[in-house]
Length: 90
Image (cartoon, rainbow, N blue to C red; front, side):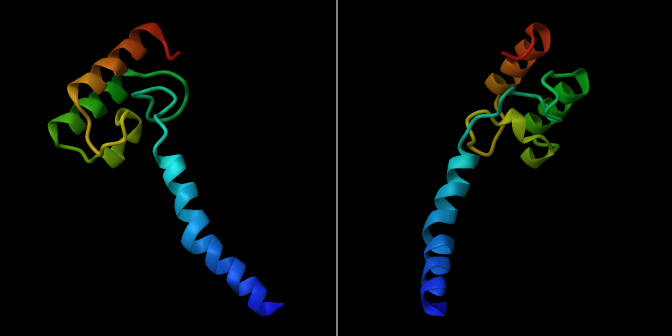
C-alpha cells in the first residue's frame, strides 16, 4: 500500500503538478493592468505598469500587465491597460 502511494505521489509531483502550474501561468490576466484584482485599472496601477515597461520595477510588481506572459511589459500592454482604465474591464 505504501509503495502504491509513493508511486502515485511521484507521478503527481513529476507529471501532473508541472502541467497544472503551466496551465495556470499561461492564462492572460482577467483585466490587463488590474494589479490588485478589484476589476478596475487605477492611475497608480498605470504608473506601476509604465515603470515596469521602463525597467525601473520588476514584472513581479504587477504581473497583470504582462498580458502575453512573456515576462516583459510592452507599450502595447500598457495601452491595453490605459483602455481598461478609461472604458472598464471587459
